[in-house]
Amino acid sequence: MLRKNDAMTNVVSALAARSHFGRLLRRVEEQRGSLVIEKRGTPKAVLLSIRDYVRLAAPEPEVLRLLGQESRRNSTDKLTSAEIDEVITQSRKAKRIKR
Image (tube, rainbow, N blue to C red; front, side):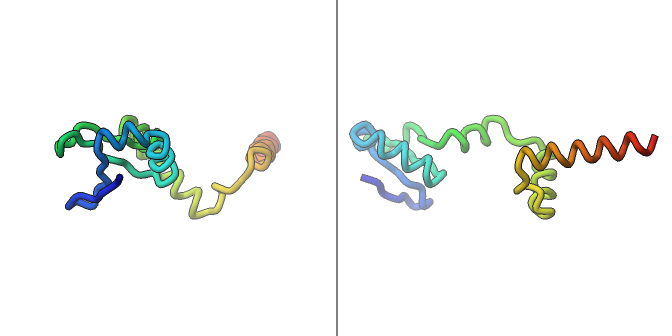
């Protein structure tokens, strides 16, 4: 069903895509990849995960990307919502005391 072309891209025929659409959807979602769908040997469409589509259609602003990197470096990306709320509460209390 799937084959790789010279650029190591997964390629599937339109007939196979129609016959195995559910399986292909799961594959692109789980593997965060894409598939080229071709008809009679000519590429016609690309199937990609919604995450990849959003990333391509609306790329993350540079400032958010940098904040995410900093958060991962500081391990603050693992905080729960409750922990974040507590940090905010403590920060606000400290601000009030300084005034």
